[in-house]
Length: 187
Image (cartoon, rainbow, N blue to C red; front, side, top):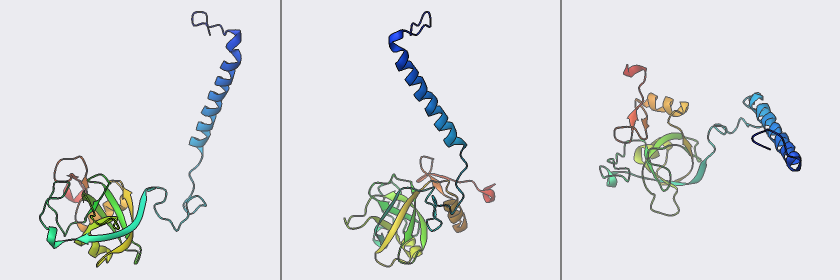
């Protein structure tokens, strides 16, 4: 194309037409996908026996262990004092301050825990839970669990923590491990 006159040069006409056609097709496909109605719950794309499958795609399945009294009050890798009565965990690679939903696959009990430490030390373990988290999940030694990363604004996480009277801590905000969620009771 001649930029001064706007004329299309004969040797490039075919290439410009195919590029324009491809662009038009891409825009049409994008508009179609955006205008498509959302799938209702329980549809073939979202089996009802897999809760949270549309919101949480990352998960791990492996063995969980717990740690408690021996480490009480010591500094975690995240810099805070370890509290065996808090719902926290140690994980090798998840970012400090991130939240995970832990499900005990033996009894289906669920707990939300915040990553504040690194570990576990044994290679055959995936996650180390605080005593409180292990107790909530019914774990006395080790157990097979599924962990899913959740966002701090996950409705189930917020409901769970508000029920316990512990507002969630958000990573990156001031305070030990994060800031507080301001709820109705705080106003």
